[in-house]
Image (cartoon, rainbow, N blue to C red; front, side, top):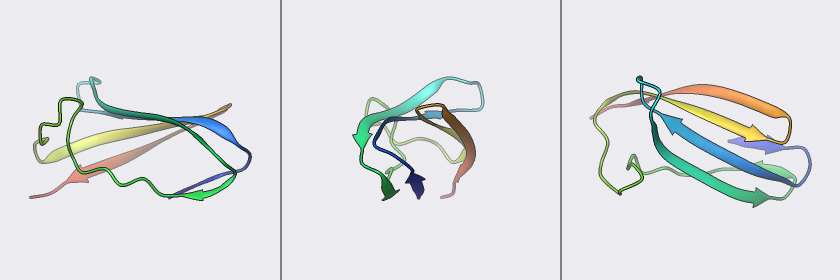
Length: 72
Protein backbone atom coordinates (compact mmCIF):
# COMPACT_ATOMS: atom_id res chain seq x y z
CA UNK A 1 0.00 0.00 0.00
CA UNK A 2 1.12 3.52 -0.70
CA UNK A 3 -0.27 6.93 0.16
CA UNK A 4 -0.17 9.51 -2.62
CA UNK A 5 -0.22 13.06 -1.16
CA UNK A 6 -1.62 14.74 -4.31
CA UNK A 7 -3.01 13.50 -7.62
CA UNK A 8 -0.01 12.15 -9.55
CA UNK A 9 1.06 9.98 -12.42
CA UNK A 10 2.55 6.93 -10.69
CA UNK A 11 4.92 4.41 -12.24
CA UNK A 12 5.61 1.07 -10.56
CA UNK A 13 8.44 -0.93 -12.09
CA UNK A 14 9.43 -4.44 -10.98
CA UNK A 15 13.01 -5.56 -11.63
CA UNK A 16 14.74 -8.92 -11.29
CA UNK A 17 18.13 -9.22 -9.55
CA UNK A 18 19.90 -8.55 -12.86
CA UNK A 19 18.20 -5.13 -13.08
CA UNK A 20 15.94 -6.16 -15.96
CA UNK A 21 12.37 -4.85 -16.01
CA UNK A 22 9.93 -7.75 -15.61
CA UNK A 23 6.70 -5.75 -15.15
CA UNK A 24 5.56 -2.15 -15.20
CA UNK A 25 2.39 -0.32 -14.17
CA UNK A 26 1.72 3.31 -15.06
CA UNK A 27 -1.46 5.18 -14.15
CA UNK A 28 -2.85 8.41 -12.72
CA UNK A 29 -3.90 8.19 -9.08
CA UNK A 30 -5.92 10.56 -6.94
CA UNK A 31 -4.57 11.61 -3.56
CA UNK A 32 -4.99 8.97 -0.86
CA UNK A 33 -4.15 5.37 -0.02
CA UNK A 34 -3.92 2.89 -2.90
CA UNK A 35 -3.30 -0.85 -3.28
CA UNK A 36 -2.15 -2.66 -6.40
CA UNK A 37 -2.27 -6.44 -6.57
CA UNK A 38 0.40 -8.06 -8.73
CA UNK A 39 -0.12 -11.70 -9.68
CA UNK A 40 3.60 -12.51 -10.07
CA UNK A 41 3.52 -12.52 -13.87
CA UNK A 42 5.92 -10.73 -16.16
CA UNK A 43 5.12 -8.43 -19.11
CA UNK A 44 4.34 -11.47 -21.32
CA UNK A 45 1.96 -12.89 -18.65
CA UNK A 46 4.43 -15.70 -17.87
CA UNK A 47 4.68 -16.71 -14.21
CA UNK A 48 7.95 -15.59 -12.64
CA UNK A 49 10.23 -17.96 -10.75
CA UNK A 50 10.52 -17.88 -6.99
CA UNK A 51 13.13 -15.40 -5.87
CA UNK A 52 13.88 -11.78 -5.06
CA UNK A 53 12.57 -8.84 -7.09
CA UNK A 54 12.63 -5.08 -6.55
CA UNK A 55 9.74 -2.64 -6.81
CA UNK A 56 10.49 0.98 -7.72
CA UNK A 57 7.67 3.48 -7.22
CA UNK A 58 7.94 6.91 -8.79
CA UNK A 59 5.29 9.57 -8.10
CA UNK A 60 6.26 13.11 -8.98
CA UNK A 61 9.55 13.84 -7.21
CA UNK A 62 9.20 10.82 -4.89
CA UNK A 63 11.14 7.63 -5.69
CA UNK A 64 11.06 4.61 -3.39
CA UNK A 65 12.35 1.04 -3.69
CA UNK A 66 11.10 -2.08 -1.88
CA UNK A 67 12.31 -5.68 -1.95
CA UNK A 68 9.77 -8.33 -2.99
CA UNK A 69 10.13 -12.08 -2.50
CA UNK A 70 8.10 -14.68 -4.40
CA UNK A 71 7.68 -17.98 -2.56
CA UNK A 72 6.29 -21.23 -3.92
